[in-house]
Amino acid sequence: MVKQIQVVQNILQSNEEIAAQNRRLIDEAGIFALNMMSSPGSGKTTLIEVTARRLADRYRIAMVNGDITTTLDADRAQQAGAGQAVAINTGGNCHLEAHMVRDALNQLDLAAVDMLIVENVGNLICPHGFKLGVHKRVVVASTPEGADKPYKYPSMYTGADVLVINKMDLLPYLDFDLEHFTRGVEALNPGLVTFPLSCTTGEGVDAWIAWLEAEIAANRG
Ligand code: MG
Ligand code: ZN
Image 1: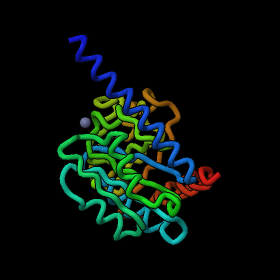
Image 2: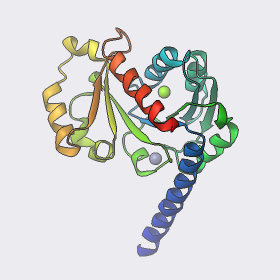
Image 3: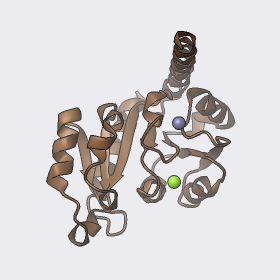
Image 4: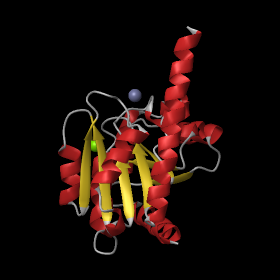
């Protein structure tokens, strides 16, 4: 039993080392990198499409998409304006690990990238446990998922740098208790930068885009 725990810790350790190497590559290239995490169906890929459409005329965007079997999300991102896209087929793995992102970075022309969006596998349980080497970890929540998510999956929220609450346009039709949700997040991660928005109506998207532009500028050095 103890041995098994040591093996797991060693795996996490080497993941951290590879993540640090990824970070050096990303920083040397002056890239701003995000790790987007959420449950399946939160609208993560749609948010990435909206983001790429809004920024593709001014910034060079690369997309790394973790998917268990398909390249559908990476295809969508590329159609929306992500100049370079790599789909990581995780072969059934339910989260991305640093070595998978390293392999993806090797496929990209990093000198021609301003922002790298890593779309993690849709899963609220384990992705947060694997550092990838990015600057910001973004959790994308959505109103149809229910307001109890921060209470059920606290680690996802504790480790987040930014929170997007997507599908705000559906709020009038759902019994999503925004105050209960916000209280739960605040208890885990006080002052977490939060963008309530709707990819359908566009409400709140300007603030999200402005935040990304400021981060891209800051990481260009
Ligand atoms: Mg997706
Ligand atoms: Zn996993």
